[in-house]
Image 1 (cartoon, rainbow, N blue to C red):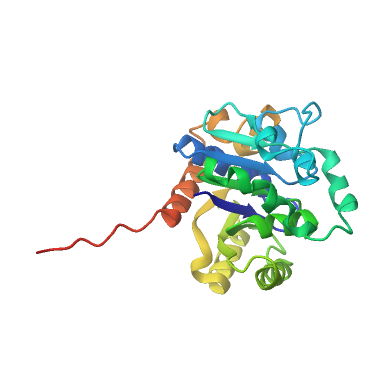
Image 2: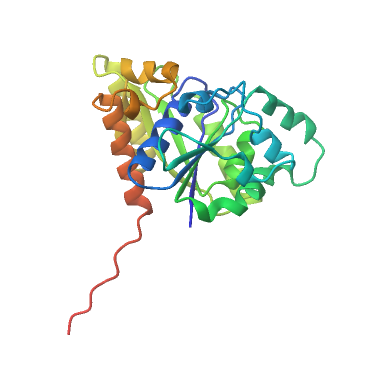
Length: 263
């Protein structure tokens, strides 16, 4: 059975795509069959994996509109256990074309139904807005991972996202859970980063992941080479951090061992 994790925050520049790409890669290298689904018309996760988003001939857009099955949208990456359903700018048309279609919020969930048993983890990278695409991702997901940057106004807008999650739970996906809040862009040289981390732990307590993603030049460089950080510089602090995050997530989803009986 697959674990579907949606990575969302309506604020831009918080590390959503960086997290989607590098968490997917870390899970895949940990021998988990993983699928990354690029739900953002910007297509940054697609290019971050190494695909040319302007040259792919079939994308998530075709699947959401029902003109292609999910199996026919899956592309390989340089990691054998990591696959991707790509996107590009044509995905913008989804919201316009589906505006009056009943059940449009479940388009992604319906698309993924046929392939959920083929992967252990499916990671959904969302656009920086609470759009129909994000609603689709939240409706299809088992859990939500929220990247939170360690900068000014970090918590601003988070309440709106959490309200949206509650509406999704009431109307579309009652089983949706919050996997956790991931602190990103942590700069050990500034008091602000520590303050944001303290505030997040104060308000959200155990929902905050133990792993913190640091500001890291190698992590910023990797997308321009079309590679996850672990393929660009596996020894960097950015790579180490995403491996740690993958371990946390795998621990959360691993079944508890059955109690032993003693006679």
